[in-house]
Length: 202
Image (tube, rainbow, N blue to C red; front, side, top):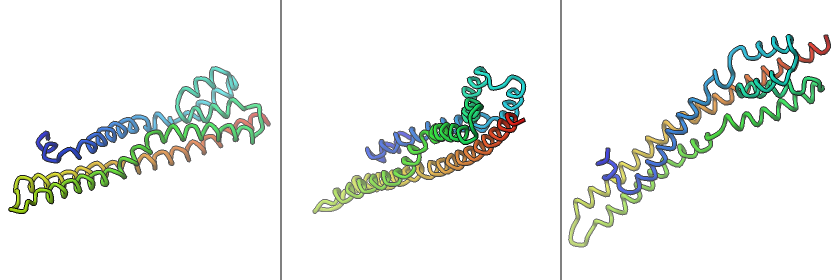
């Protein structure tokens, strides 16, 4: 591996840094965007059952908001249980916007790395081409310099694509996950609003 890095020349170092950052972000998002952590199964049913038993207590709301992103959205509804339906929905939407921002954390960075990695590889290719043309002396070719320039060009191009392809795949995967979670949280929040106002009217 070290011999490959040496053959690729100095343009490979920014690509190596980008690859380390991309791997770290992918691992972090895989852990943070697990379904059990974002939209735990059965949470809405447990919240409704406890609300019917004890009401919207401060302990219930605090525990809920510390539980998960879905809990924060549902907690916003419980905090405004005495307000009108419109006020409750506005509070849920405001909290939902903050939750969405948290779920999308680092995705812009990952998408940027996936987009610029081929360009960084192309830059390495250009550097390799400069090395090749620089090795053309008037009296003849320098085969060592020629081989070095070709290795810089090919290694950087390949490494840039090697970073960009999985980076783009995971970026699109995480975007789809976040979009799905947002829709699911909206549906559960609407269900909570309907139940809370139904209980008040009853």
